[in-house]
Image (cartoon, rainbow, N blue to C red; front, side):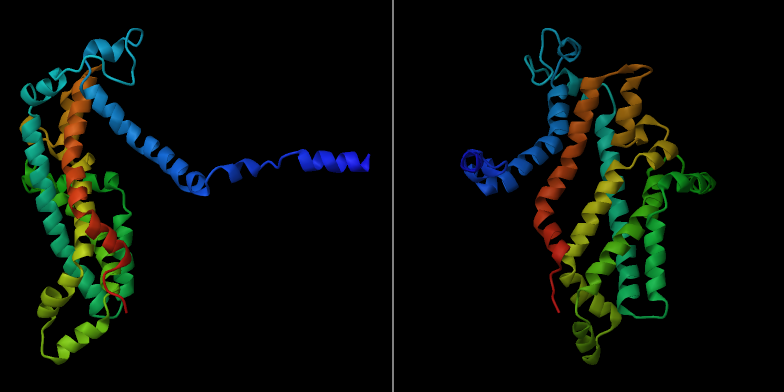
Length: 296
């Protein structure tokens, strides 16, 4: 019995032996990567095929598969571009996002440089306060901001968004740039001070060129947050001509309980392209900002 039991144990395969027949790289890299891509890209795929489907294909799952397009149509895009103010919404969103991003970056650079490089008393507490300000939900801030927008006569104008978006962009960009400025050696600044350079010259000619990856990373995040912002744009803008893409698509293409899904998905698809293009151009700088361009 002992010999028979030993022989049976030798012949029984181990539960993990099947992994030895599969390359380890496939199990540890390619399978998780494929699963991640499927989960990540499937919403965009669904959005893309819905934008080119007719209403018959959208609602008739008996004769048409929901996972591909049988008879593509451009009616949804035509409705979006020519029967709504979508081109104007796109221009409004671009203008508000670009101006808000540059204004926020300017303020964030000044604040981050002062906190990290001037070494004044209480700098750490100021940095912590800025980070805590970023954690305040916009849903709490829009009520007092609405009073200020009405008081200054900015309601239903682009300036209402341009001047309120920095309330959550500046804390985020400052916190991000503080970490990047901290990675730049102080010796560079001390040598420049010995040579007679002013603080402004040091900032413009030394720190900012070295911090370009960090600036691009902060700018991309600020632009994306501005582009996708919904609460302030819904609260401070009323007329259709002044709306941004996130608000215009939702408010103008939903009529009561009727959802124009094809036009909605087309608006979301076209609205996501500028952000995707921006990321594709600056992805190398964005990755560089994650590790720092200068080492001690």
